[in-house]
Image (cartoon, rainbow, N blue to C red; front, side):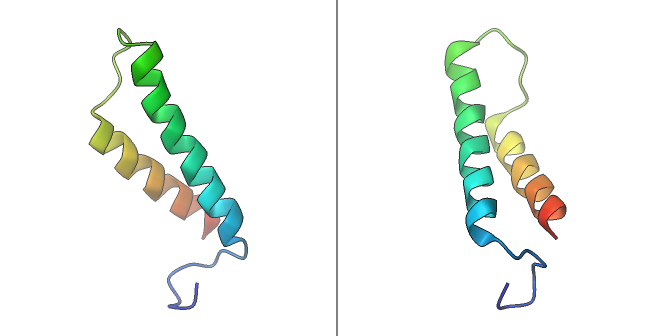
Length: 56
């Protein structure tokens, strides 16, 4: 926000959303191993970009 790269007004909500999303992505791999999820790296990149877009 200070660098002018985000229009977000609630960095705590942003961080909480990202944190819970990432935990969900990892948990899915642990408990539903047969589900055809994309690679974790791609999932993480997608989550970060989507949350950044929603919040900006």
